[in-house]
Image 1 (tube, helix red, strand yellow):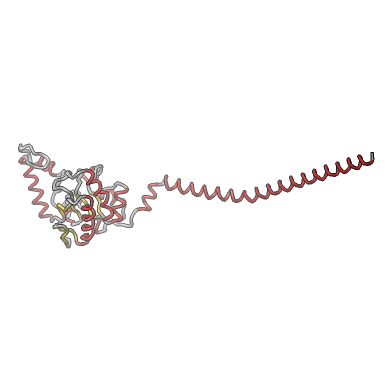
Image 2 (image 1 turned 180 degrees about the horizontal axis):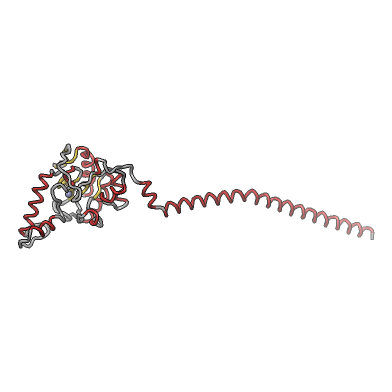
Length: 269
Ligand SMILES: [Zn+2]
């Protein structure tokens, strides 16, 4: 039938068109996909380099803590006035600093403001905070030291309170756990203060002491004889003895748990 054949013809024609259209569609889709992919590739690889850079940065910053410690190290010198080292190995003659009075105690005039501010901040934690000691001359330290020795010898000291007499040698050993021989106490620098809520050593409420100690670096002070520092300082824990070293040094020393003796070893002369 001519009609049928024409119909069949047109059918095959439309089939062909559909196939061509499908093929075209596939080609268009494929090429779009390929173009999209090729555009995406460099982006992806640049992202990857960024992320590897990031990871290499983070890994270097975590693995090279000692290096970052060095780069963090304040630009300070062993010879800086606020880092002067006085201890039993570094005995100093009378230093005669220019003095100022804070809370009835004398300090080096250069730390007057820092001491006032630190005390004021400590008083916010406990109004009972006060200065017990500041500058002490070598001569006065000698008097104090000898008095402590005779108290210990008599059995009425800080360590021995038995009322039984002990030898001078033993008494000196006891005294050196809380007082330094003349010339070896940093109170002679005028840069050390004893501050507490009470007038006896290590008798301050622990929570208050911890809060005050945490504040200290903000004002340039460090707790000079902290727990764990005994091996390098030769002095037992003292909750009240703060030493001015300057804000940057104080923050670094506290963050890295360094005594002044240890910190100075990291610095140039
Ligand atoms: Zn002290």
